[in-house]
Length: 312
Image (cartoon, rainbow, N blue to C red; front, side):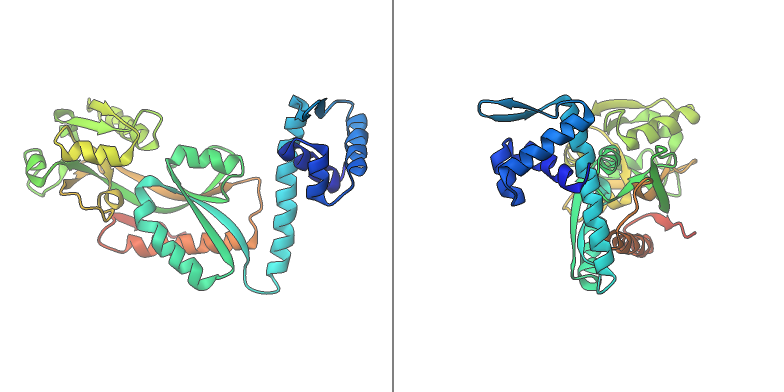
C-alpha cells in the first residue's frame, strides 16, 4: 500500500466511478482499476462493489477511506510545513470558538493573524464546547478554545484564563432584590430564581449543576434551551434568569439586561487552548496558537471580561 493507492481509494469514493477518479487523478482508468484490484488482493477483502451505474464503497472500504484521508492530509501538512520554513507560515488553520467567546475573540484574532501571517488562511467555527472537542478528534479542527479542567485523555489542553460567571436578568431592578450590599449575588440565593439554561449535555450546565450540588443549593431550571441567542431573548422577556460569562453578556448586541457576579463561592471556569494530543501541529497552526494565547491574555486585561490570564 502506498500513497497513490490511498489517493485512488479517496478519488473513487468521492466520484463513485473508476473513470471519473482516473480523470481526477490524471491517470488511465486501467491503472486505477489495477491498483485497486491488487490492493484488494493484498488485503484479502473488497473495498468497492461494482454496480451497473458505478461503484459503491464497502464497509471495509469506508474504514480504509477514513485512514486514507488522515494520512494524505498529514502528508500534505508535512510538505507545507517544510516549505513554510523557507518563508512566512502558509496554509489553512481551522479554529473552533465556543459561542460565548466568539464575539470577543473572533475579530481581534483574525486581525492579528492577517497582520502577522498574510499567507495563513484562518477558518473560524463557532459551536458549543463539547462539539468542538469532537471535531478536534475527527480532524475537522486543528485548534479549539474549550472550557473545563478535566479534558478527555486524547485531547491536550493549555489553560489560558479563568473566567467568572454572572447571573443575568431582564434588568438591574429584577436582580436587585437578590443581591448583597456589595452588589453581588450569593450562590445560596440561586434557589430563589427560575433559571433558563442549556441542557445537561452542555459544559456550562454541567458546571452549574456540579457547583450547586457541592454547595447544597437546589436550583430550578424552568426552561432548557441550547440556543444562546434565544436564552437572552427569553431573559429579556422576563421569563427567567440565566447564568453566563461576562464575555457573552458584553457581546456587542443591544440587550438591556442586568447582571451581577455570583459570589460565595465564585462560579468560574477555565478557558483552554485545545488540540489533539496524537497529532503534530503544522507550523501555521502553531503560529495561530500563539496568537490565540496573546489575544486571550490581552482581552483578560480589559473591562468587558471578568477573567484572569493563566500564565505558566
